[in-house]
Image 1 (cartoon, rainbow, N blue to C red):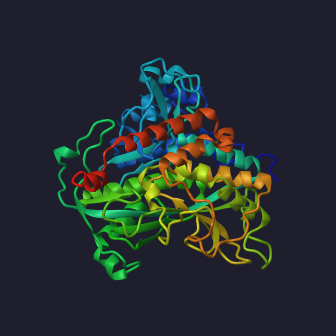
Image 2: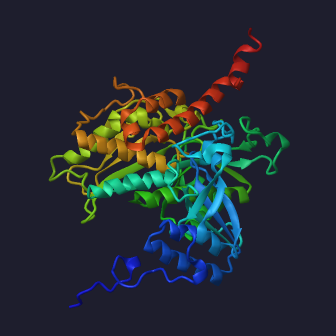
Image 3: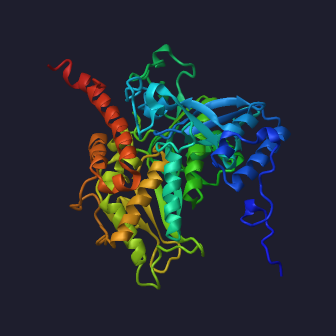
Length: 507
């Protein structure tokens, strides 16, 4: 019997380190500040071999911003070793913008956030690539992509890096001996573009985006799961399958949804941090694929022309024992679907649903999805396999796969913040031993509290949440509240087409 674990360190053993580096690679930003694990050093070595073997010429180094959108730069393969060694800088003001690209903080007025001057004057933050996320992009020629985490120039963690926020919450969960498994169902619309060229009217400015492209429906409505309709979109369906599969994303299904031009994909359930990355890549891939086919894909929840059925993001979730991998939500025997721990987690989702809403539904448009009898929830309650409830308990008594499905999110949500919010709420329910009460059989008539009717109401609820301030810190909550409040106020100040139709001729 060996007295030492001779597996490589990258595999969790005590053997040789995964950091064989050239002298020129030593002493960089990543090594100086200890920002990579042994597994990431091993992935970086493999990445460089793949780049050489496939002749990769450009690599996009990206981070996911507060709105769930990829931001970054394309670097050449010759510059890649230096970026892997010391990261890549980008303006910190990217973290201070609303969805239109307008900075909502006065960055040139001695701004301090989190006590750091790095945001003042739009100073730089450092994008530190995560080599484990490397993908070769199937829609581009000889191009790869890396997701990155954000750090200050002194090596400190930027508190507004949403990918890092989720991983820190998952680290705290691991300290409790548990892990979070999630499974995403993402709905989206794909329209045919009436004019594939960009019109000058589509060019906007910060605070005033240009007009949306002119599109037409790709499929009729009211034909849920119609295979004939899916066949008529075969080029799109097979394109999504091939693209996501080539990105090593665990696609489970593609289906035609109820509304015109409405589709849904599901991904295999997996570890929460990994799935969050996969959602970002899947949304990007679908939008890029459609653009190259002369189509327009949107993860906006309720675009014009789709009033019969909005799109949502149904997030399945369960906790597992970290040592055994066994799920802890299923009830024992045949008496109950959920264990006491699972019921308390569910109660936490309900208790803090209003405060958490802005993370799962972060846009003005998403709140127009909360309509009665629409397969979208409009109030805070749970149901036993009831798709009108905010939280659906999936499974039956004795089912080892019993889990929770939150149906309140919109598909464009930042995946790190959406998943993080569920964990924060659920764990508070466990810590306080909360009870969810009885399930609802009439989710649209039950006298339960309503979900927020507007983004503004949701932002106010987060602002007042003691739980999220305790778990995320005042700095993070104040930052996000400021961003979203500025977005909502800009919406309120806009004269809408509805107002023009309603009053212009009448009054």
